[in-house]
Image 1 (cartoon, one colour):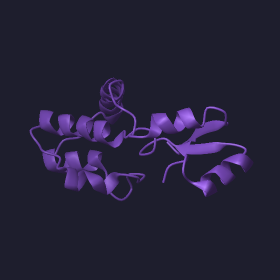
Image 2 (cartoon, rainbow, N blue to C red):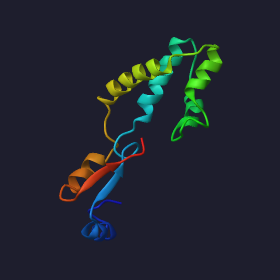
Image 3 (cartoon, helix red, strand yellow):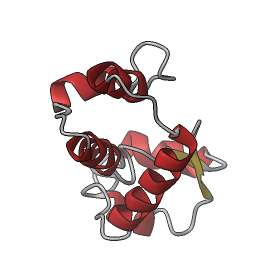
Image 4 (cartoon, helix red, strand yellow):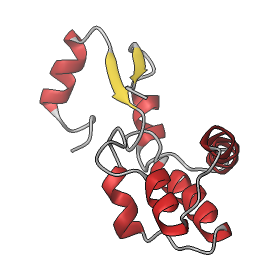
Length: 123
């Protein structure tokens, strides 16, 4: 449904004080670069991180499943996670510099140019 053709969307926009957006998955998909950073770390340790396994931690607090604990179990090693995660964060930010917004996100923000918008996120 487009904002141009939806009467209910136009009605809402006339009365809304602001439009709030979640970032990940709505404006930009950051999960793939995050997965790739984990995958590269696993590869450097001679292990593979299948996407089917990694999805266990998406949207979680890592209490259910943790790539850190999983890599330690696979390798029998302990890691300096503060240093490893700092290096991964640099990789993720580098990869996100080239990421494209979710299709339609830029157009939607153009249509909302006269409305207050904000990004809300829990992370």
